[in-house]
Picture 1 (cartoon, rainbow, N blue to C red):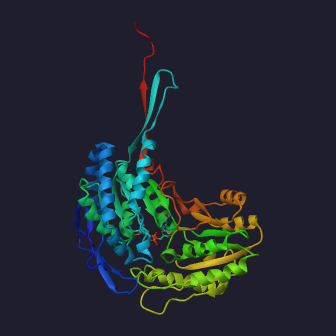
Picture 2 (picture 1 turned 120 degrees about the vertical axis):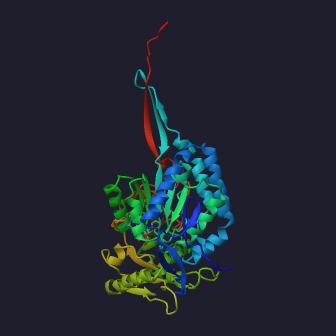
Picture 3 (picture 1 turned 60 degrees about the vertical axis):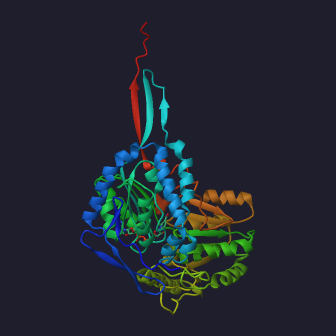
Amino acid sequence: MRPHCHETRLFIDNQHCSSSKEETFRLCNPCTEEHLADIAIALKEDVDRAVECAQKAQPAWAALPVQQRAAHLNRLADLLDREATKINEVSSTRLGEGARTTADPRIQLDAICMGKPSVLGESSLLTPGQVGLSVRQPFGVCGDAILPWNVPITMQLAAVAAGNTLILKSSEKAPLSAAFVGHLIAEAGFPPGVIQILSGGGATGKLLAEHMHIRKISFTGSVRTGRLVAQAAAASNLKNVSLELGGKSPTLVFPDADLRKAIPACSQSIQFNSGQACIAGSRIYVHESISHEFIKEFKKVFGTYQHGDPLDKSTTLGPIADEIQVKKVVEYIEIGKRDGKLEMGGVRVESKGFFIEPTVFLNVPDHSKINVEEIFGPVVIIHTFKHEHEAIKRANDTEYGLYASIFTRDVDRALRVSKALEAGTVTVNTAAPTVSQELPFGGWKGSGMGREVGIDAVKRWTEEKTILIKVDEKHEC
Ligand code: NAD
């Protein structure tokens, strides 16, 4: 079933509404390049109103017993479950394999519930004459994830669980699923003002990043924009910032790897969402003794794809998000052709829509732009290496540090190399999109600041306060 009509408005104070000056932007279907919807742009007046509503709602929301806040979140999770097909359809209208990639909200909620003990704080009697307590309290109004297009409805439910109220801004490339979720928030019975959902481009995101009444902002997107968000936060009210940014993730394939498992995993890692994933394994380092076989078999698996509408079950490679992005991928491919050897693909599919053939480059110098910068398309560079230490050095020779994978049957090597790789997540004998909801996720180096999910997810949305109580220790009678 195709979605016929989409929610395109802002969601403020539990109500959908147009932009204050009726401003909209055009959204088109990346499979057909046809017009899909006109989406409301949140202007300064709308952002200010969203923040005011969130400010008004926050004290009462934080004062609710945690079980009541959890009950609201559980109702929302039930509704997200109920509407999963529709949400997937709406996401898929924009995304490569959206129908198969939307996170299960319940997993996030389970992780949040498991995290409850970590928000309890500590106590101390170590200083004579004093009882010390440390307690954790919400920040207040938080700006959620100025989202990228490839994770359209990841909502920072942990922020709301902690007692904050939230303003979420969707990506201008994928605003539909977030706008639809507004209906579910109202249906779940959240008090007005607890969660608002805004749409718009970078200008709307900037208004959130520099807002004086937002106390924490979580941003997911590119390194370039992450820097701007951090700068805006510093220049305004020094709000707390967490950043989930890009990646150029390496995969190391050692001679003892089980290639029957490694090859499909490496292929899926760069084919997933058509390579539009921050954790995509876009650089493969394969030992020279097995490189011939690896490359031959990898091309067979990666080359077997069916491009098309992600809503069709037979589609294995969806479109690139929009015209700007597809042109960017083509530019990188041209650089690859100059700097290295094009082994497979390298062209835009000749049909309507923004499709790129699965592309493999060999013999690319380590410092070539396509080996250093995030491409965000189905483009992979395969290198060969002689020694473990050489592979580690080259894998780490990047400003990114989000994710890395290793394929080996040797436990010592798996642990030694995991320790040496500079990445927030290292997977062994599996590759992206493998992630854990119960353990922290985030980037080293230029891939970000702070962590998300995991049992400490709620704690990260709280401020710590120390309370010191003087105690008269002299016995009176
Ligand atoms: P982007 O940085 O262009 O945009 C992300 C969001 O920032 C959008 O909602 C955009 O409107 C907003 N924005 C733009 N300018 C802004 C400004 N000046 N101030 C505030 N907000 C602004 O990123 P994208 O191209 O949409 O997404 C792809 C990027 O996201 C890739 O680099 C990818 O690796 C990264 N990503 C990271 C993770 C992670 O968890 N680490 C997850 C998904 C995507």
